[in-house]
Amino acid sequence: MFIETFTLRAAGTGGIFGFLTPLYWLFGYGMKGLLMLFNDQYFIALTVFTILTRLVLFPLNIRQQRTMAKNARIQPKIQKIQKKYNVRNISDPKQRQKANQQQQEEINALYAREGHNPMQMGCGPMAFQMIFLMGIIGIIYSPLQYILGIDIGDKAEKIATAIGYKGNYFQLELLQNIDKYKDVLTTKFGDLFTPGAIESIQNYKEHMTIGSLDMTITPSWKGGIIIIVPILCLITSLASSIVSTLIQKKTNQAAAQQQSSMMIMMLMMPLFSFFIAFRVPAAVGFYWMISNLVALVQQLVMAKFFPPKKNIAREMVVNTIERRSREESIKKIS
Image (cartoon, rainbow, N blue to C red; front, side, top):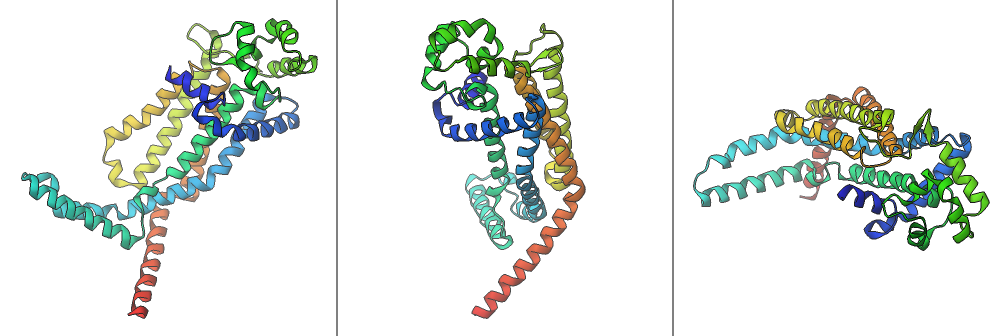
């Protein structure tokens, strides 16, 4: 139920994500332009769109990696402070509380000297990625509204009632079964579903296939070859997670020691995406698969041109220069 609720809200049908509607329209215009450019080849347009959105996020990913490098650089100093106070081995509650407070004060002073804010550990890039994901979901789940420009608006419930549909993927249901519903739509809602609009929907649906795969349907174990979509989602997500974990081990040696936690995190998202791919139309799974592949390429590029060791070394040089500058400023004031 959570998956359906999340995707329904993200698709712009209302609720707390309604403020993202302008983003859906923006993404919709972008996809419409790509469809015109690539002669209505939906999956080519979606692939290019995914690559472009990932490229927009690329600078944020570089910044995130540099932030991780800065955190990795001061980890030995933090561990030295933790070893100094050894809070875990203090049995007396009052003494432990006092030692813990002193330890935290010294760690905060270290952050101040180093000019590092641990609260900035990559939340920005993650938030932007989530917004972009929800924007993509919006145009995948509501193509009639945001790509084809059929302003269903507040008539959605009336249309759903007229066709007898009670599920969550209303516009995809219309898209998948347009030939079944077109008489009802043109009779009762002729102002929206004109002959030209029906033709646009039919043309859009024809291009929502890859070979014999209808990407508007939801994969299932008994659904035939469409099962390849969740499998590829799992494989590509797992590959991206493995590469990300290996890079993180090189960047943060302290995290690398937590093998079990990292293994759980490495497997959690691929398994989660595999599960979701059975609950949503195959087109969404296709997007995630392409997104995983692009993310994998980005990680490999970053590992080659922005390797963790060089990032850490660069942060050490930058920090030394900044610290000396602060010291000189203090001397001049005093």
